[in-house]
Length: 138
Image 1 (cartoon, rainbow, N blue to C red):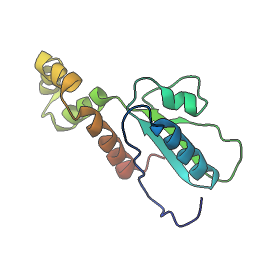
Image 2 (cartoon, rainbow, N blue to C red):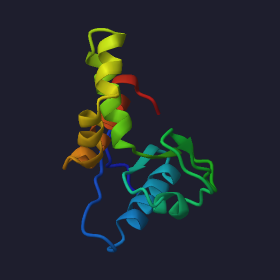
Image 3 (cartoon, one colour):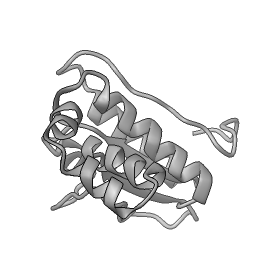
Image 4 (spheres, helix red, strand yellow):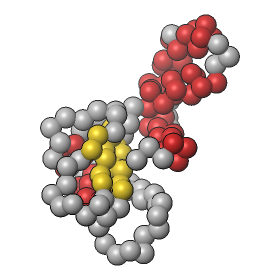
């Protein structure tokens, strides 16, 4: 990798199923980390293929560090994204009080919306990136 990549850059990998998106994303992440960059790779795929591609035995919705074979000063973290978790965080952030928050979070219409509404899986990565931006988590 060359040093022309800015300090903060988002690289999105998309396309139809089975074309190698996960393998490409893992390769880009490893390559950037080995080049000395702090790197995060996120997935919305519940099949945990990214964990396999990165050599991780388990995978969670929390950021976990991926061991690198070389020490170049870079780092690689990975996480699986859970759309429901991010929508729940939005409710927690904007609810006026705990009672309102609990009422919304336990509402069956809300639960159905989060589980089946189109676009929720696309929203989760944007919310997570916003969290990184606000907190510089990695």
